[in-house]
Amino acid sequence: MKLIENLHFDNIRGDITGGITAGVVALPFAIAMGLASGAGAIAGLYGAIITGFFAALFGGTGAQVSGPTGPMTVVMAMIVTKYIALYPETGLALAFTVVALGGLFQIVFGILKLGRFINLMPHPVTSGFMTGIGVIIIILQVPQVLGFYDIKGSTIGIFSQLGDIENYFVNTGALSIAIITLVIVYLLPKRVRKVIPSPLFALISGTLILILFPQYFASEAEPMSTMILGDIPTGLPSFHMPVWEASMVADMIASGLMLAVLGSIDSLLTSLVSDEITRTHHKSDRELIGQGIGNTFSGLFGGLPGAGATMRTMTNVKAGGLTPISGAIHAVLLLIIVLGGAQYAKEIPLAVLGAILVKVGTDIIDWDYFKDLFKTPKAGILIMLTVLGITVFYNLMAAVAVGLIMASLIFLQRMTDVQLASIVAVQTIEEAAHLDEEHQELIRAGNTLFYQLNGPLSFGSAKGIVRDFSTKTNYDRAIIDLSNVPVIDYTTSRGIAEICSICEEKPAEITIVGANTKVRHFLENIGIDKTIVT
Image 1 (cartoon, rainbow, N blue to C red):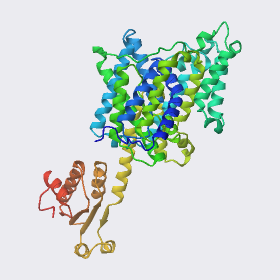
Image 2: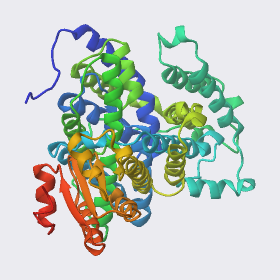
Image 3: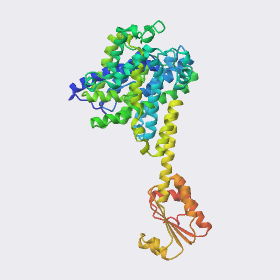
Image 4: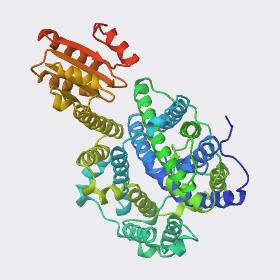
């Protein structure tokens, strides 16, 4: 296995251009997500630098650019809020330990080659989950946009506090800057976006507007100092020794697993997007290992968890980046900014960052699914909306679990219907025209039930098969044909045993024909007489 997958120097000029462009785009997102997480803007920058560098070098998707993403930031915000509330002095250190733990879980996922299973996530589940994440991001930015800087917490907490809105003073200056920012990020002409990305243009414009015209936006009630980001630490990140609380070990493991699963899904979805636009094929398990290494180091050095970032990856590719060199350059550029220019970011308005994240939230929402809502199967709509609701109002992992259970049950019901519909039951020669001569002769002998099962048989169809067979009457001999059954499970084999019991009680002679070696051994192992299976 290569140390660095997809590494070559044939595209070095495009990789340099792509890396620099992606780094410029990543700057406002890293700051905004660091602030939204509760860990601070510098944590967002460190996360973008560390995960961006290590995931690029050790991942399995050549053009992918990694860093803090909306879904990962939402989970991190929940973790930080919870742990700081319980342990004010060590809560943030506990949260960073969880980030490192999540990275270790991702490495294990990659070693165990679980990437292919993550790619099997049903689309309604993924759609509902990602849309829910987008809605959460938007809700969490409402206080920033309105200037309610003391309102924090979960979506439910923010809703409850906004319900008491008469106690809050709407900062018209913050709201005005946010509206200007939203206009820029949504409506900036394409020819301008080719020169400078709309989030960066909005960041610079909003900051300059507040600096140059503070009299129009700040007031005695809302001084300028409360509207801006404030000082950001500079310098290289320092090592954070993992911190544990005995009473929180189980919760920390669960939170780390949540970050690992979410980060894996988020990254591999972006890998699929990268494959589509670069006409390449990523290596899922290698990507999980790379993301895991990045998140492990990010947690150990005080950075946010990261994942493959779709917008930054697409920006990188469109600017010419194709290899891990571009992702590494993007990280190095951010490091240079942190070391030499972070002090200039203190004047950035909080409302600008909030508005940029609102744009992130709307981009994550699966609008295509809503456009095709009336063309989509009702079962898929039910799964999507259920996952969406649980994601926004309860718990992210519970949303995925419920969605997967619903999708599995619906799939099982559909497969059961197909299996039962494929049963062929013949008792008269008129019905046996499609059978071979040997089976037709058995039917001519009279009082014979020919019962043919087809396809792989699962536990979902076992009861239905027994129920269907028990409705048959007027036969002295039953032939169960399994020639078109490649595999069965234990429950189905018990169902066939129950059919044998029905025939014995009737009484009627029963013969099982056509069973392949694997199916025959399965039936014999549960006690069906060898003389019955021929």
